[in-house]
Amino acid sequence: MAKKRYLFFDIDGTLAAGGYGNTYIPESTKIALEKLRQAGHFLCICTGRAQALAVSFLEELGFDNMVSDGGYGITIDRKLLGIRPLDKDKIIAFVNECKEKNLPWGIQPENSNVRFVPDERFEEATHDIYMDTKVVPGLDPKDYDHIYKAYVACYYPYELSIESLKDLPWCRFQKEYVFIEPADKAYGIRQMMDHFGADYGDAIVFGDALNDMSMFVDDWVKVAMGNAIPELKAKADYVTDAVDQDGIYNICEKLGLFEAVD
Image 1 (tube, rainbow, N blue to C red):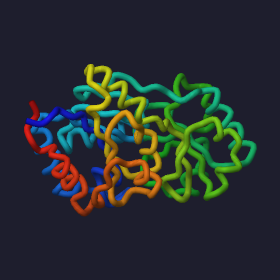
Image 2: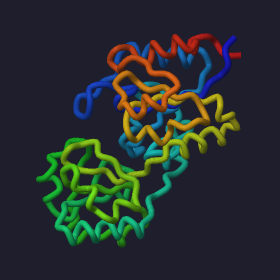
Image 3: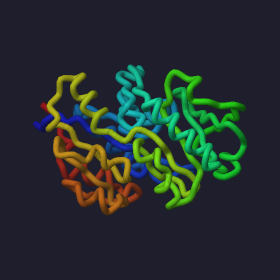
């Protein structure tokens, strides 16, 4: 009999292939998840996406638990327990700098698929399809209790000259703009493990991108996809095949995770 493991999966590039706008779950991944579930392991999504943008994957793939918002959101038994917001003063400083430099910006003050922007410039600059954009004239982060994410439209490497970003977690997923969002997936994983009284050493994490670096720590086993960035592969305990080449199924079989747990 195998030992019960707590498995944490990133979505894009790990569970899902195809990229934004063309996302799909490989059939072998669906089969692997069902076999893991039948074996008795704990399955959890672990994503940088807002909880509202990731909840559909719970339903599609049969997950009940999720670490969302880059580690700051916790969903257990499909119930959102809460999302820790970003530091509001730092977001205000960021927005003020964007205004001074005439950069298109936006904020996400709600757990939803909607980004708030002060004018049309952000959408004109990005033509973004990742989430909806709502123009709020006179938009001011001071008017909201919580800010969960923020955005700035610019091309690399301009973000390196934005001083306020040095005090905030950020990542570039799109060439047209930068995401200012939590980047501490390990924090959320520990919160989840603590909730269930589980040993950190029983966790296995699966990822591919820069925002997965935060969960590639020595507390647990780390699996990088074949399509992962080199920096993540360098920190991994195992490197499997690419997401669209049966990567999840192959590594789970190799690690003996399809055997029934005690």
